[in-house]
Image (cartoon, rainbow, N blue to C red):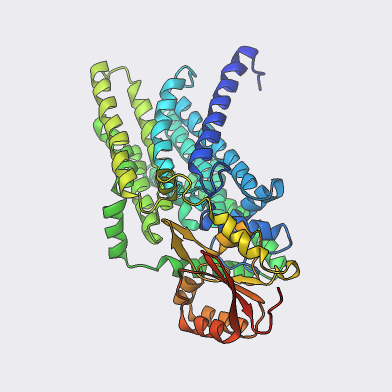
Length: 517
C-alpha cells in the first residue's frame, strides 16, 4: 500500500478532528445519563452501568443480574468501567462508538461524491439531520441502539459500495468476505438486542434478491455460508464463556425467551396508535430514502428495494418492542442512506442545477421541518428534552441516595435491596439508579423493574417473596411516593421489616431485629 504524503494526511487529520469534536460536544449535551455536565443517571443506562460495576467486582450478568439484554452490551459497559469507574467510563466508551460511527458516515458520503475529499461542508450538512434526530432518539444516552450504530453504518457502507461497483462493472457477484461481516455483525447485535440488526436485514434482503435475479446461485450459497460462519464467530465467544460458568442456559433463556415475552407487553394496535400519535416525525425520516429516489425519478430497482426494506424492517423492529423513543435511533441508518442517494444523484451531469436546488429545498424541509414536531411530540418521553427543558431538575437526587446509604452500617451495605420505581419532577427513579448513585451493589439478581417482571412471570414474585421472608437482605429501600405492588411483596415487607429511616425521596426498612444505628 502506498504511503500517504503530508498533504494527504492533513485533510484526513482535519476530518478526524472535526468528527472527534462533534462527538464530544454531542455526547456532553445529549447523553445526559453519562455526561459529567449533568446530575442525571437514567434508568436503563443506570442498570447497564450497575451490571458493569458489578462485573468489576466478580459478579456476572444472568447469575447476579436478571435482564434480557445480550452479553456484548455488558462487555462494552464493562470495558468502560475498567477504564474509569462511574459516568466518565461510560461516556468514554460512547465517545469511541459515536466517533467510529461518524467516521463511517463520512466514508459513505465521500464514496458517493467520488472520494474527492473536497465536499466537507456538504458532508457536514448531510450529517446534521442524523444528529438532529439523535438528539431526541438517544433518550439520555448509553442505550442499546446507540451501540448498534457503527455496525449498521458499516453495513450500509458495504451495501452502497457493492451496488455502485456492480453497476459500473456489470459483475453482480457479491464479495463473500463481506457476507462474513454481515453474519458477524448480525450475531454481535443479536447478543445485544436482536431488533437492533434491522438495517442489516434490509441489506441482506436486497443482496439476496439481486443475486437470485441474476441467477448467481453459487455466489448466493457462498455468501449464505459465510453469513452463517460470521454469526457463529460472533456468538461463540459469549456462548463458550457462559457455558464455562454454567450459565449458558440462563443467558439464552433471558436474552431470547424472556426477551420475546417482554416484547409482547403491549398489543399491536396500541403500539401503532402510539407510533402515529407520538413518533410520526421519525417515520417521515425513515421514509427519506424512498423520497429521494422518487424526487430524482431513480429507476434502479435495487435501490428501491433497499429503501423499502430498510423502512419496513425498521418499523417491524420498533413494533416488536414497546415503542420507546430510543428505539427510533434505528432510523438513523435510513437517514444516512437517503443522504447517500442524494449525494449520488446530485452529481449526475444530466440534472440541471435549478432542479437540484429545488430538490435540496424539498429535502431540507423533509429533514428539518418535522424536527419541531418531533421535539414536541416526544417531550414527555425523551429524557434529554425533558432535562434541558428544565435544567438542573434532578440535582438533588444523588444527595438523597447517598443520605440513605450513609444511614446503613458500612459492613452491611452489601445487604441492601431496592424495590419499586417512582416518578419525581418528570423523571423516573429506578432501583439501578439508586444503587449507582448510592455507590452500592444489589443483593439479588431481580434488582430493577421487579413489578413488571412479576407481571410477565408470576414465579419471579414467588421467588422474591420467599427470599425477603427469610430476611436475607438486612435492608430494603423503597421510594416514598410508591405503593408497593404486588400485595405478596408488600405483605412480606410489612411482616418482616420495619421502617427505620426516611428522607423526602426514600424509605429505608430494616429487617426485624436489625435496629443498630
